[in-house]
Image (cartoon, rainbow, N blue to C red; front, side, top):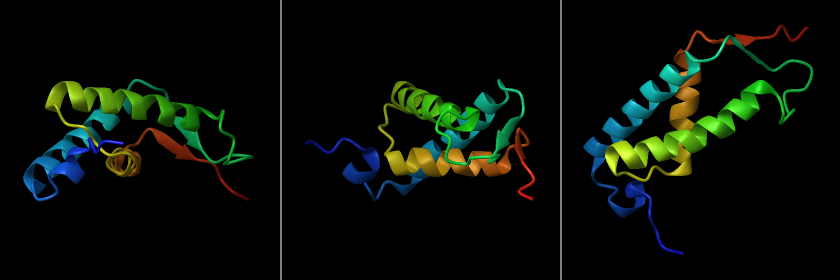
Length: 100
């Protein structure tokens, strides 16, 4: 298996990695705006058909394509995941159900 993630190929290019990750966060926040408010948790937080989980899968794939197309950069799964959850934390589109 060939290494293809830019972070692994050129780990010292911190400036590029940070720029791509900042853009990915913006990308995710902009995509969240396309959806109504999204509930987190609920009766079963592990329901893989829940809207949040479906959204995650779709946006991960789209973000990877966006990154390659826009930056000619192959983001690692960890980078995509980290940027996604940073964006979730900064977005006002997510509503957390009361756990009581």
